[in-house]
Image 1 (cartoon, one colour):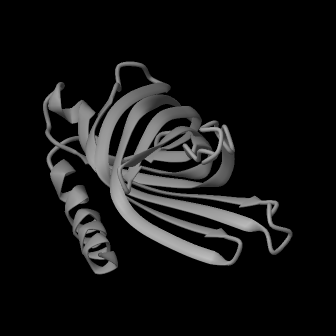
Image 2: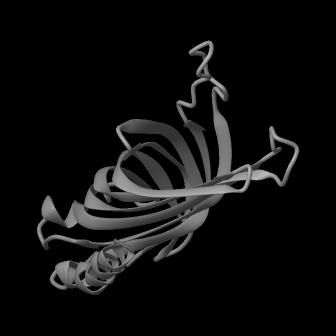
Amino acid sequence: MKRTILTLFLALCVSAPLFGQSGDRSGHFFAGYAFARTDTNDRDAGTGGPIREALNMNGFNVAFGGNLGANSVTDEISLTVDVGGYFSSLESQTGGDDDSLRLWTLTAGPQFTSYRHDRLRPFVRALFGVSFVQSEIASDKVSDTGFAFIGGGGLDVQLGSKAAFRVFQVDYLLARHSSENINTFRVATGIAVHF
C-alpha cells in the first residue's frame, strides 16, 4: 500500500504543473504549520462514554497545484495535491512510555482561487485521497491505511508579485479507518507562492 501511495504522489507531482502551461497564472505552492483537533471516537467499553473527547495534534501542511486553463474562468480552477502530517504524544495511562498518534494524509482534487483582487487570494477546495494512521499505546503499535476527505478554504495575502502569506486555512478532515471515522478540524498558516 505504501508503494501505491508513493507512486500516486510522484505521478501527481510530475503532472500537476503541466495543467497550467497556457495561462498567465500556472499554479500555486504552500508550505506551513498545521494544527489539528481530532475526535478519535475512542469509547470506554464499560460506560460507552468517550475515553478522550478530543486530541490536539501539531504538524505540517504542504500543497501545490496547476491551473486547468487560460481563460478567466478555468484559470482560477486548479488540480491541487495536499500532503499533511499531524503528531501527538499523550501521557501513558498505563504508567509506561508516552502514547503517540500520527496521522498522514495525501489528497488531491479541485481548488478554486479568486484572482479578482490585487492582493487577496481567497480559495475553496474539495480533496480526496488516502490517510495513514499509526498509534502506539502501551507499547502496542497499530497502523492502518484508509480513505481521506478534506474540504475547506482560506485566504492568502500577496506580499509581492509571487509570494503570499496564508493568513488562515480552515479545513474539515475526515479519515475513515476500520469502519470508524476520525473527524478532524485543521487550521494552517504559512507561506504561499502564486506563479
